Length: 365
Ligand code: ATP
Ligand code: MG
Image (cartoon, rainbow, N blue to C red; front, side, top):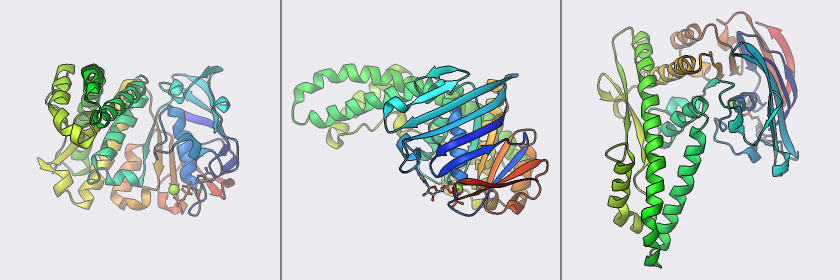
């Protein structure tokens, strides 16, 4: 799968960037704060998932403009697709088109275009907090299962309702009569999310284990496990868990169990990576996870994802950099960096310079 044409009319600080990328390596380079990451973010949205930076749509509309507007042409599944999006503060501005068909939301694009993104923020995936790991898993699944996004949103809404009940019930205990019903629906979504995450992690873990073993020349093994807050993954287990946590949740006005509190655990040679992994081991784990993510997309969708590498080259040592570029061979890659020398090993591609949100020169690598 690869982009043939990209037109960023307006997106954050970017304007009028027209680019016909190489099917191989594309280096997006320039000084700090010129719009390199913004460019990758604009491309990422074609996956139909939310911004990989966790940004809201309003934040991506250029300051002082009415809307953001980006269009692209990409090859996938043996044909050329035309996709475009436009959104602004005014809801009526929203227009998401895929091959001439209009969709009400970005999720309408899911299942047509696939990408994997790797940014310095991912390097803290191992030692960072559980929300980062949950976001990583959820974003990856959203691309592969377009319906998953709706399940997550519904879970979020039901959770909000239960939390409100937990707070308001302190003033009016009669509200607790409706709790059983809310918890029933919440348990249903919770079970679906947990099962989906577990089966995704299982497959991801198999690929990542193999890759990690390669990076460490067979000296170390990586294992991944899902750590749930309920003692089971079916609806009934969650009903029980919500019921059991009511007394505590009434005190805090929140919900202490459920997929919004779950975590993924990585271990090297059986030792918990969060507690014991060295810097180098953490980087190798993240690299393995990202490459495994590409492999799962390939297996599930039958398409090679476009790979977006935001600023990671300078964060990886030479050996890991070469390993990454070698393993990614054959896919379309977009790499951002300040100096194109950071990817000197790359051949057969283009380098696009971004300056002040505009294209400022294109050359072959
Ligand atoms: P670095 O090398 O430091 O990572 P970068 O080239 O990746 O830099 P970006 O993150 O793409 O930089 O951001 C470039 C600029 O875009 C920032 O200075 C930021 O203030 C600006 N920016 C962000 N959102 C908007 C917006 N909605 N409208 C206009 N400008 C914006
Ligand atoms: Mg950047």
